[in-house]
Length: 155
Image (cartoon, rainbow, N blue to C red; front, side, top):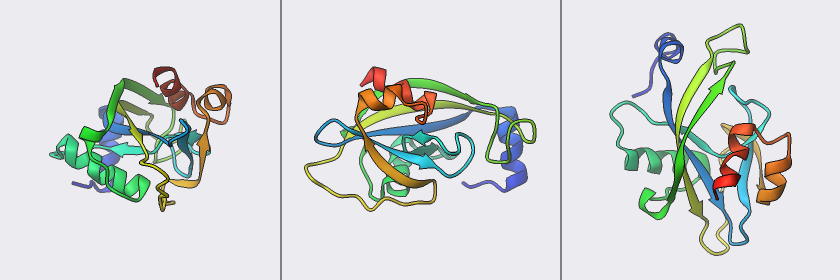
């Protein structure tokens, strides 16, 4: 269920959002990051992912989000749970810090491995460009958002 902007603003202002983050690794151990087009974390390199919708089972959400964020569906039972994280942002989809509600996410992080030499057709709605990052480079880069960098300590 998608919410109109007024209702969604109220939700962001009142409750944490629950989301899934996808740490996709290639056969060489590099992780796919996209440069975010939208708030929060706009301009930073970040893992793909998104919100779980009301009344959406985790498996359904995982399939929907992998299709939207990676261009094809993956099954949650083929992913490895990394952990549960909290992300706090001063801004939101409704504006920069001080002009809109802040955002709080409870995140279920999963690691996926891209089979063989498969090539993805990556959507650009959330991330303008994508890049495969070696984990040690991602851990050290100020261009990679701190909420993404912590995943590289877990994988």
